[in-house]
Length: 243
Image 1 (spheres, rainbow, N blue to C red):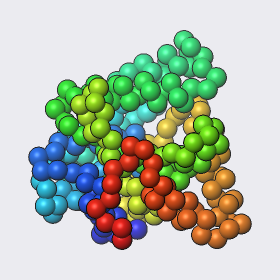
Image 2 (cartoon, rainbow, N blue to C red):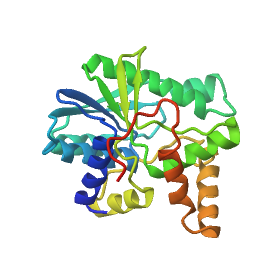
Image 3 (cartoon, one colour):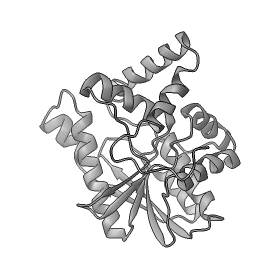
Image 4 (spheres, rainbow, N blue to C red):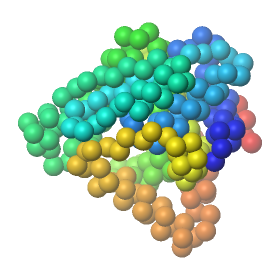
C-alpha cells in the first residue's frame, strides 16, 4: 500500500465519522509497532490538505521493558517535524515482578491508557488517535461475542467525559495486510515489543479464527466488518455517508 491509498482510507474514516474538527490538537499514541507508525504517517499526510486544520503530537508510553529503544522513532518524528515525547513508567515491573499477573494484558492496557491520557492532558491535546485497523475491529467483535455474550466493537469516535478527551480511530478502514505492505515499502522503524505475553493473547486466537472462517467461507471477513458498521452498536456515532 502506498501513501496515497493510506490517505484515502484515512480521509474516508475521518469524514464519515466526523473525527477531526478545525483547531483540534491530536495526540498520536506510538507503541513502536507498525500500526501506530502507519497512523503517524497517515495523520501527518492528511494534515497537509485536510480542510479542517489540525496539529498532531506523538507520545509513547514506555512500559519499562529492558531493551526497548526508541531512537529511530524519535528520528522519524524529527524528520516529520512532529513533536514527540516519551512517558517512562514502571508498568512492566509492577505487572510481571510485583504482581506476577498470570493474565497481564487487561491490567497492562488499563495502566498504559491511564499514563497516556495523563500525558495527553499535559500537552493540551483534546483528542487522541489510536491505530486500530479493520482487522482489530472484526477481532474485537468476535471476542465480545465469545467472551462477553454481546455484539460490540471499538467505536470510531468516543468521548471520554471523565478526561474531557475524544478517542478517534482513523485507520478503521485499513486492512492489516495493507499496513504490513506499507511498513515494508516505507521501511518503518518498528520497535518490536519485548513483552513476554506478546503473541499469546485472546486477540491472537480471534485473529486465527477470522483467518480460518474466511478460508472456509470466502468473503466472511468483509461480511463481518459490514455487520459491525451496520449493527447499530450503542455508542457508535452516525455516518455521514453510506458509500
